[in-house]
Length: 111
Length: 114
Image 1 (cartoon, rainbow over the protein chains, first blue to last red):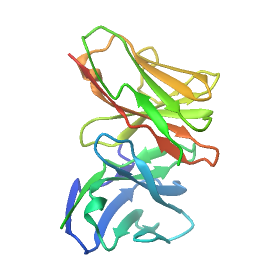
Image 2 (cartoon, each protein chain N blue to C red; image 1 turned 180 degrees about the vertical axis):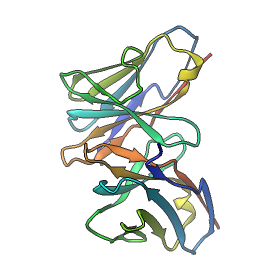
Image 3 (spheres, each protein chain N blue to C red; image 1 turned 45 degrees about the vertical axis):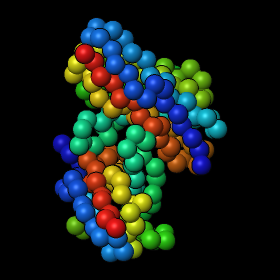
Image 4 (cartoon, rainbow over the protein chains, first blue to last red; image 1 turned 135 degrees about the vertical axis):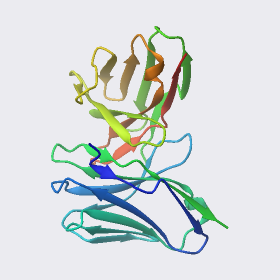
């Protein structure tokens, strides 16, 4: 039972353009959503988060949008840079405070 | 930022042996640490929650006798894969909860059981 899904395993974007990574979830009781970035041979690092009571959170080039009615969140990176190339995981926090992760999307930003 | 270190980062062992993986919070005390397992192209699956000074809480389907977790101090949690078999080969990642509640992840440990 995959409660958090990232249906695109990979995404390729040209440098300077917008990268949009998507995430869908099934549990309406999730109260907090996070995005993590992971480079090969390293652990995930926190990128940006959003509370379930908000629909947008912005931090520099990164913006996360939350659509609760559609149970969908997305991460926008603009402008995309080659250093953004990594695997991005979305995660949702359940009522017990545990994080449920998606499968990850590998972003490749080409110069 | 806070640093969490895992050791070893890569281990190969023979089937039937036990392997211990360490997770250390280097510059903060973590009363709670988490152990995850990741198969290729799949999500991080929470295995257990490790609380300092008490027994770990295991997720459904995770064998506690197979995956022994010890959280003996505020900076160290260990995961021991006992009597490892090839199906235990995976990428194991720990995370530690900082004082602000933020999670910091280790670099991960890749286990290959021959």
